[in-house]
Amino acid sequence: MSEEERIPLNIPEIALALFLIVVTSLLLVGAVKVHMNREVETNNLESYLFVNRLLYSPNCLSISENDRAYPGSVNLMNFDEVRLGDCASKKNSGARVFLSDLEGNEIKRVEFGELKNAIELCGSKGDNFQCNSRRIFVPLTGGSVSNAVVDIEVIIKDE
Image 1 (cartoon, helix red, strand yellow):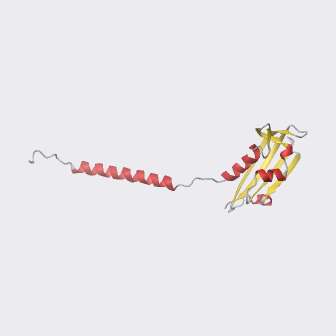
Image 2 (cartoon, one colour):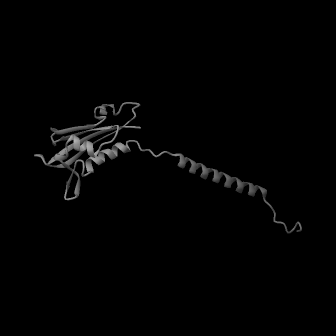
Image 3 (tube, helix red, strand yellow):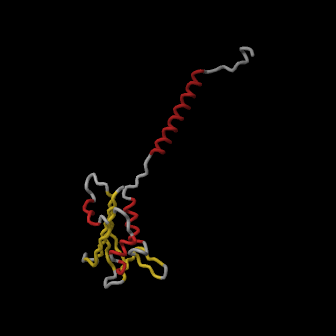
């Protein structure tokens, strides 16, 4: 090849292109590594699911008739320590469930689980517990009151 047939090389343009390619590649690799090393935040997820199981499972508080469950409705006959302990038993956990009428008068109260007396620990600094509490208004069957308020407090020890 003669000198006239050679393609002229523009070294500054090639260096700039290589620099941009390297920087872009490093940014992509860094972003992927950060994403792969990220932990999924599951704070209080387990206790939230525990509360939902109590409220919506036909084996717990929910009304069920003819193999059909009515989530969000409470059967007063299901409101006992043995039944709730069986349906929502979990090691290193505890719960308190209060049922009251709309004026705040307590109808029934159930406590169950190993940590039922440790609910006061919720909110303390440096605790290693997941806590969740929820108050919902529910239709009620099996009692003299048709509507009620259910307060649920749950504590689960992190392992």
